Structure formats: structure tokens, C-alpha cells
Amino acid sequence: MLAELHKSTPEEAKEQRVTLGLWLKSLREAEGLSQRDLADRLSLDYYTFISQLENGRGKIPAHRYAEWAVALGQDPKSFVRELLRYYEPLTYQILFEDVAG
View 1: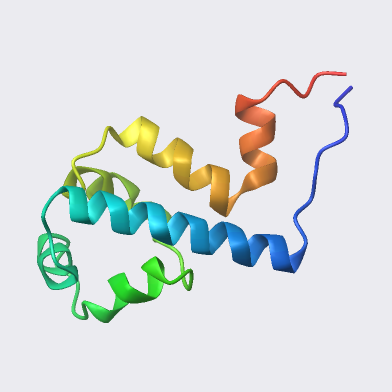
View 2: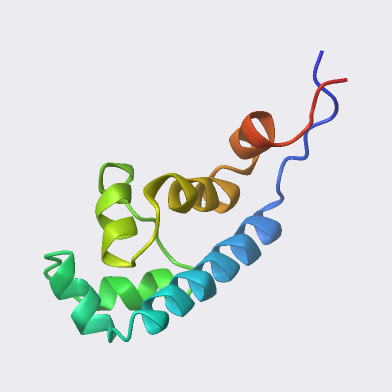
């Protein structure tokens, strides 16, 4: 039986996306990349997508997680785990936190 899982409110979900955006921005800046540079690395048509993500709007498409990890100099498993923490907090709790009751 699982212990109580916490379901995010819409406000919490928005805060989580903003926090994730700040993390993505810090990774990009640590690589010395502008938003346009990162968009070029990822073959994105619009660098404004990077801005949207960094401001807590939108999601990285799941089929591109590994490409994003490489573009940002991250280990893909660790990168995806961090994305799950913010995009799918209940899934993250089940997979990575002690939720057994």
C-alpha cells in the first residue's frame, strides 16, 4: 500500500515549472550558451521556445529529453529524473521517493 501521495495544486504546478525553468537556464548558462545557441544545438526553428521554457511555460517534448541532456552537457538519466520531479511529481514520488506505507 502506498502512503499518501501529494497531488500538486495548479499554483504549485506553476511554481514547479518556474523553478524548472530557472534550472534549465542555469544549465544553459553554465555551458556558455545563449538561447539562440541552444536552439541551434537542438535544431529548433525558434529560440523563443527556450525563453518560454525558462519562464515556466511549456514542456520539453519527451522524445527529445536525451537531445536536451546532451545539448546541456548533462547525464541523460539524471536530467530526465530532474524533469520528472517537476513535470510529473506523482510519478517521481512513486519511482524515487520512499512512498511505501
